[in-house]
Length: 114
Length: 116
Image 1 (tube, rainbow over the protein chains, first blue to last red):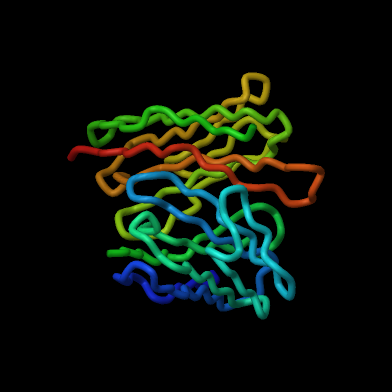
Image 2: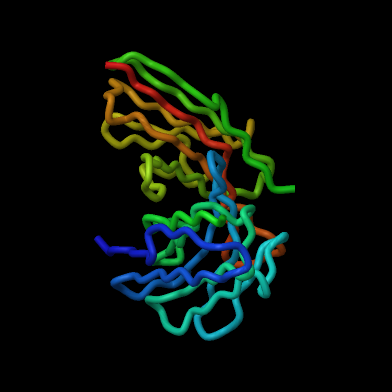
């Protein structure tokens, strides 16, 4: 089965700084997504990472705060910009290999903002 | 709007007992319903799913049932084991605005504890 990896696995950052999270899949995928999971909460979709075009953001999430890149079919990045303590969460990428709505998640990046 | 309600929020069972988690959804057009298991410090793992053209699906000790009329679906775990202890999330696909790919919306999660 395909492997989904994320870097970094965790980080502690100062407020006002930015962090870029990478998601790498070892095979080409149709769809890639980014989710946020606040402490003890469920998952919320941030955006769909579109290959070769701008990401599609969900209500409440904006490109200036969460810029996303997807340069090819196996890689995407999410940047959390100008961080505040409220951004402390687990950030997860997911992929849909076949366009059948089955999403598989990476291990997550645990971000703490101080 | 899009909504998935999940109950209970916590569930404690003895090893060997069955566990049932229930979810209701709001959009009658939803057609895909996955269940995820999330262990501490890990990403969610897809454990079973069901599409709207079937009423039940089983995979060893886990099963999912779907009632489209009532707009609810359930996860059943039989012969529970301590390693089943985790947070379980239901989800549903909502297709907005006629797009070909829908948005996966998650329930609030159920913390399952299986006592040896």
